[in-house]
Image 1: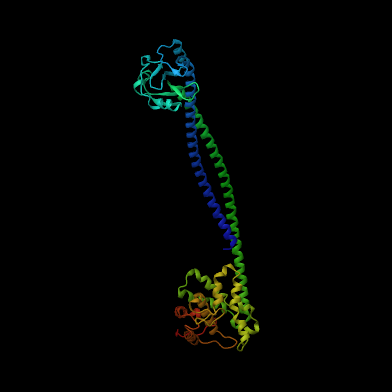
Image 2 (image 1 turned 120 degrees about the vertical axis):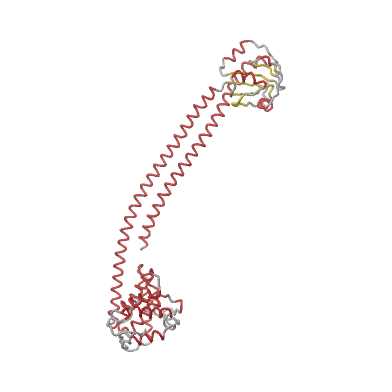
Length: 451
């Protein structure tokens, strides 16, 4: 496959992965947004509750302090007052949520209360929030259940259950310390109704905002996915077109190089059909040798184009009837490297390049062009080299007539382990016995079963 075609396919897979990642991103974002909505809603609800309790506590404390402080405090001293004017209780009843108001001294004496006044003047333990309020000079407010002891009357008045409790310091004139404390019990219904309605508003708003964000994100992802799908479809179409163009180009290239190879064969009438015969013999030996099927293409093209480098060898040398001198032989010895260079420019033929370059190497290291020896030589190149030598021996050449099959077979055996790879020679004769017609020259003659 060409780099452009491979790039197109790669981009198609990249688009597919991008679509998958977009879907994962959308679901992950939805989960994050949902978690964010829950967290934000919870935080805002908690803040609302705290703020509502704080505001209600401040409002009740301010109201109660305005009514009772002038009656109970002289200087910075709180006086026990069991009998306050009736209008005091009437003023307190104007705040409909108030249930009970107690005023305490720091020593635990109940100074005044609007409910069960017989408790006034009694001492009770200052525990819980009441003790903290006086000790810390800081108000405390909470929704809680009524206890026992001094709360028994309030428990009976509201019928049990929970109530809004406020503990607020009754501060000195300079505000530096608490000279007593207010304990205020109020009905929680209005406060709870207010908080519930506001919580609903908060949750509806938060969910609406996050749903809108998720919807916007989903639209963006959908648009991006649609764009990527269109790009993917376009890329696939272009990749197919590119692959078709590449196949046509590859076919044209093969036809061109086959024409070039035919030109080489035509330069010497003695070698006409030589390349096709070498290919045929090499494939038979390669299959006998057990070369992997995916490597047979390399043998097929290596056998067919092994001599294509001779296009650069002058005709006078190729057709010379006598022996070549050293300079002429050096020119001929360049053809494997020249052929490998020519073929290397065709991507379909890349795997055949080592076969073409090394088909004239010898097992003993005395071959050319790189003087490789033994296992250094690719097995497929050894196969092509033996097929080339066999066809050269069994066909007429300008410098000698063809050898008989028996003579050529004897020469191959003699050169086993020196010129030719031993295992390739063994596979050669096994293939010869199996399909003798493959090893005949184009002009057949009788073959003796000597192999």
